[in-house]
Length: 311
Image 1 (spheres, one colour):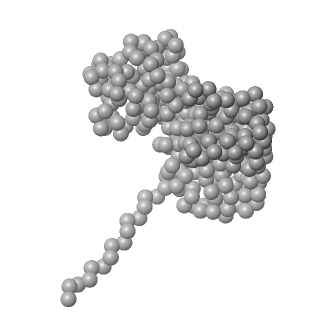
Image 2 (cartoon, rainbow, N blue to C red):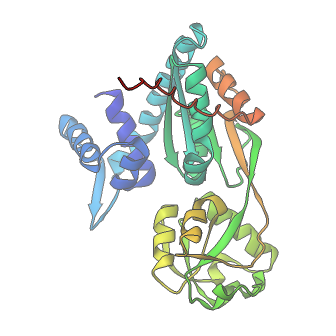
Image 3 (cartoon, rainbow, N blue to C red):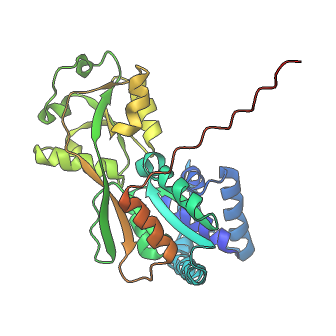
């Protein structure tokens, strides 16, 4: 059994989906599937049940899950400690983030950090708000970044940026004419939403609750596990979706989606760390960078070659 097999097992167990686990780990689905099969074959134990197109933990898998989490947490703690002994000259920093933050907020900070500390390896796993919080609590990530509200006495939570949710519809939808749409009228159309556990969904649920509505009051046609899937579905059907303004901006600019005139309250991007675990120098440096809002310097233009005069 290898640590990589444990890491892959944990990613699949938390998502109960091979493709989503592969995306989070930046591996191919076939590599993830092969790793799970090899682990099961080595010990003659079935860790997952295949139910149609779904995958779920077997009884043996449920018993093994907390042990796998504990082992990876100890390995992470050992790596963090030995990396910290070398300061910022070498080491590894494990991050996890929800989709919107991973795609639109963190990359500039990761580039800036690597430029300043090239010996420190950064790893980023993408999940939703719930799985990211669980990873920080379990020790699989030293820092987590989420969009939804988290309440845990084990976590230190700091707001690092503000974000705005918007409602989008395809051209031709009744709400695409620019007329204001009150939150109280949001039950009058079909919806494509992110899955339960998503920070985008929980923030939208809070906005609905303030208007006396609930997600259950909406006509939800689809629940999808990624922002890209939600946008693609809405662009091809007369329905509505709620996403981050940054996520939808390209499709709005291309004319494939229209922003609805409906004011939703802003939400916060938050950084999570464990209250009781040792914070490494690398984690402290990355957190300081994010809190300061430091973006990487613009790349220098290439030097132009001097022209050689014609003979």
